[in-house]
Length: 165
Image (cartoon, rainbow, N blue to C red):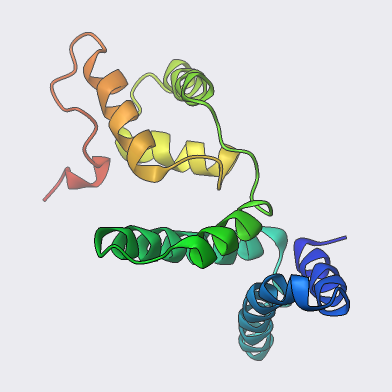
């Protein structure tokens, strides 16, 4: 079962669950609607239905938006319980996050395999292996720390595309 199919099944279950699941149904309805809109757009471009990676990206985008809304509401002293509940609901569809130790391990594996890797190289490999399982800013900072700790590293991982300019 694809992630999109799972979301639709969960939406159907929430709709049948009565008033206590109405918030869940509302959150899933919005997400499924966005996914269906993207699928229709993708079909017009002959790329087919959304795959699980595209669904994860959509869920992650929604979760990031909720995190920002929660942060703003908290700073204004507003109630964030509904947004937090929605964030928890959607977060359950995302893969488990890497622990800091696991993130370090993956970064070090990439650096051992690619001794000349720079920040962008490591981020691309990290995305390929563990999309959705880490915070990009945290990973970027940790990669920069590990890159700068390498002997003889003057450039702490800036893009390798800057040569020749």
